[in-house]
Image (cartoon, rainbow, N blue to C red; front, side, top):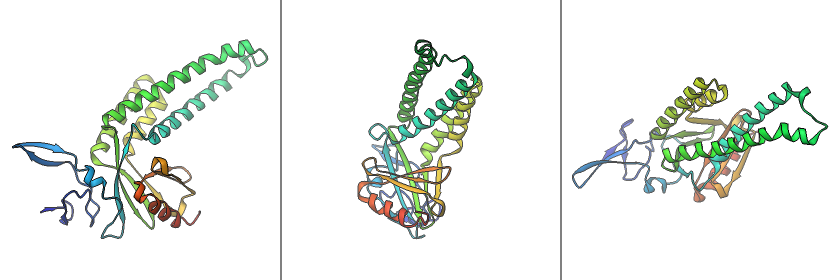
Length: 247
C-alpha cells in the first residue's frame, strides 16, 4: 500500500494526486528486470481519472495538453510577442513620424518593408522557440487544476515547473546580455510564474473552445487557461460560469 507523503492518506494504484490534501506526486521509482528506472507518475491511467471531487470539497484533475497537436499555447505565446512587436513598431513610427514619406507610395514601401521582413523573421523565431520548449517538455504541457466555488488554480506539475524556471532564467540572462528589456522581462515572468489562479468574484468573461479543450477565464489583467477532457468539459465550463457573479 502506498501513502501520500504529505498527509499519509492511502493511495490507490494509478492515482495522480491525493484526494485528501491535493498533493500531486513526483515521478515514481519502479523496478524493471532488477533495474530501477524513473517513470512519470502522470501516465495514461492518471490522466483517465478526469475531474475528481476530493475530501476537502475541491475538484482536482490533471490534464496533459499535446503541444504539437493543440496550438493553444502557441497562440498565447505568439500573441504576447506580437503585441511587443506592435508596441516597438509604434514607438519607432512616432519617433520618425516627420521623416516618413506618407505621400509617396514607393518611398513609403521602402520605409515599410524592413519592418515587415523583421516581422516575418520574428514569427519564425517564435515558432522555433515554441518547438524547442515543446521538445523539452516531451510534447506535453501537464497541469494540475484545483477548483472550488471561489476560483480555479492552474499549476504546472513540479517536473515541468523546474524546467520552466530554468528556461525563464536563461531567457532573462540572454535578454540582459543583449540589452533587450522585453526579452529580459519575459524571462523573469516565465521563471516566476508557473501557476495562475482566477477568483470567480472578479472574472469578467468565460469563453469555451471545446475543439481545443480549453476554457479561457479572463479577469481585468489576467487570462487563465483551463483545460478539460471531452468528458469533463461541459461540467467544468458550467461550474465556472455558474460561480462567476459578474457574468
